[in-house]
Length: 186
Length: 176
Image (cartoon, rainbow over all chains, first blue to last red):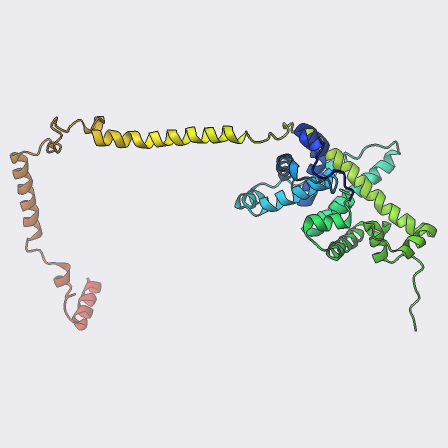
């Protein structure tokens, strides 16, 4: 982790502009929470709360990790706090908006390849999304932190309060399960 | 007999390489083995495509439900002032009826006499001597009906007697 901030002096950063913060990170947060929880609507709320909490607590950002990693850590805490509440359990029972993997796969940007190749790529995306759904909540979150948010194993351990070997074990299990779901291709 | 070692990366080493925790000897193997590199690259490509699609999906979703960036909370001083105003309003809402109650200005207490004594006795229309006499007569007639010589079910079916008498009474009842 690189240290960006001189001791005692915090320069003006992107954290000081909440609109810019939302513009830059909202979609990314939304994706992380949506695929971590499997609930698109809940992800909206968590993303909003995370940005607000980050803005209010921006003085505590020491620049020891990237803003994206810091926000992911806050999102994990917001999610944990919310999952403890009765209101969350109630709404989870009553209304949970599952993600439509077919719809999501249709957003795969066209890269100039043949229609057949694009169809195949979309199918692969759907398979991976379904494989993620079958992981345990913890495995899924850690998988996303590593491969979607591109966090290091050490950063994941720090955010989740886990030892590196524990993170590694969860990742091994997640990878084994995902590979099993995806078949012999990888 | 020692098992034959695979010339390629075992699954665990492949996972470690994906996690960014690959051991130097496996990294060296990857540098030379196109098959293992291909397997790693295939997984990375699938993840990359998933990341692209899911990010485009969430961007579209964020744009579809246009929400303003979350507003920071109101300044504490302003929030505190609003709290005090609310508290004062609640206090007034409680205090005014109590004051009115104690000083008798409420219309609900208009029947009190001017000297502030206890309210006058409540007069119910129709509560006259004639009405009382009429009611008494009605009650007497009810009593007369109740005290008539009609046999009670207990004595009629010998329910107050012993068990044998009760059995006899039930038998008679069934035979009727």
